[in-house]
Length: 166
Image (cartoon, rainbow, N blue to C red; front, side):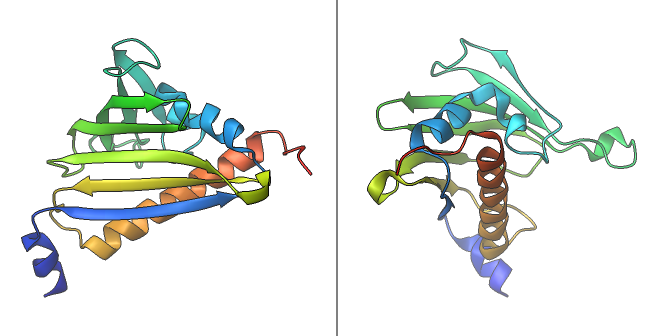
C-alpha cells in the first residue's frame, strides 16, 4: 500500500548529505565539477563519458552506465545526464536525466559542496526532484541516493589529499 501511495504523489523530493571530514571543500568540488568523470568517484559506474557539448559548461551531456551482470549486455543500467547549471563560487551544480533505462520520466538533481565550520572537512548535499519511479517506493529511492552519496564521499576522501588546515 505504501508504494501505491508513493506512486500517486505528483513529484518525489529528497535530500541527503555526506560528511567528508578530511577533505576540504575545494578538493571535493574539483571532483564533482568534473561532470563527465563521475565513474572516478562512483565505483559502481563502469563508464561516464561526454557525448555532446563543451566540458564543464551547461548543456554538456554525459553517458553513465553500469557494467553488465554475467556478461549480459541487457543488464546494463544507463542514463544520459545534462548539466543545467554549474557555479564554482557556490560549489554547486544541477543536472537532469534526459534518457535512461532506469524508469525516470523526470529527474532534476542539485549537488553542492559546503565547507564545514572551522574549515575542517566539508559536506556534499544532494537534492532531487523527480517523478515517482515505477517499481520503487520513495523510501527505497532515498535510501539508494544516500548509499550512493556515502560511497561517492568515501571515494573522494580516499583519493583526495588530506586537509592541511588546523
